[in-house]
Each structure stands twice: as C-alpha cells, then as structure tokens.
Length: 189
Image (cartoon, rainbow, N blue to C red; front, side, top):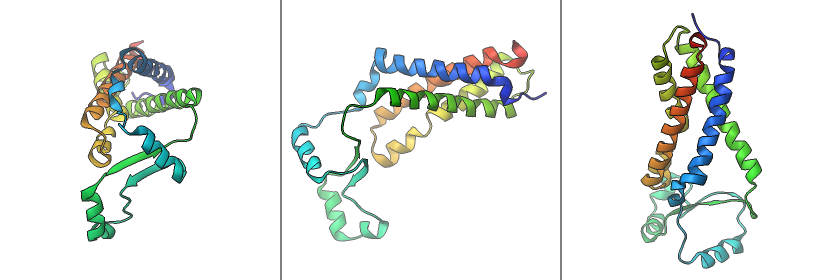
C-alpha cells in the first residue's frame, strides 16, 4: 500500500524545522563556513571603483563576454589572459535583512522537505522498515540540499573546499531528513 504525501505532513514540517536549526548550528556554533570568503587586500580601492559605477544588484563577470563568438576574438582572449577573471555578486546597500533571509531559508528547507516527502510517498511502500525509509530519504535529501553545489565550483569558480563544506551540510540535512522520516513513517508509528 502506498503512502500519501498528506500522511507525511508532520515529517515534512519537523524535517524542515530541524534542518533549519542544524543550519543555524553550522553557521553560528561550528562556523566552518567562515572559511568560504576572503577579503581583498585593496578592499577600499575596489569598493570605491565599484561605487563609482553604481552597479545594480546582480551577478557580474569580469571580463564580460556575452557569447562564445566574442570569446574567440583575440582582444577578449587577451583580457582573460591578463586578468583578473572574476564573478562579482552585487547586493543592495545596507545591512542584510536577517529576518527576510532566515524566513527564506526556512521556506527553502520546508519546500525541500516537501519534495523529499513527495518522492518518498511515490517510491516507498507503507510497510517499509526504518532502514529502507532512512536510506531512500537520505539519498533524496543529499540530492535536494547538496548536489547542485558542484556545478558552482565547476563553472563559477567557487573554491572546491567551499563546495565540500556545502556537501557536508547536505549530508547533515540528509541525515536529519532520513532520521525524521524513518521515525515518523506512517506504518511504523
């Protein structure tokens, strides 16, 4: 007999909330993501240069190349060779709105948990044991929360060490999801 995603509402909410709490511990207590960012030695000069152009929030590349044909041009190749080659994210001025960011993060976790729950509802039978539920939800959780980090290192230059830290986070969130779904699986209550 199959399980309906509505049978998993408690597991979805608890997983979303506990993953959010795990994220808070990771960032506020363990702080291993502090190594994700580096400061520029000439931060003041770069800030002044960027402020002079007043860029709107967005993702910018340096040198900017709009298509592969332009990349084949000698002048563009010279810009890449001489550098710097960078991707810069410009955000709105002012202190980050932590309430908004934390709310978006919890919506991210609850939505991810819903997707995991939906997949579990169509792929795990109601009579499954704890280990079966844990294993399948763990893999779905890892894919939900981590796998997309890899292309950011491949294509956008995120250091691989950063990627590995985010994959560690994904393993933690996946373990939370696997444990909660296994504990709250309808046939096992």
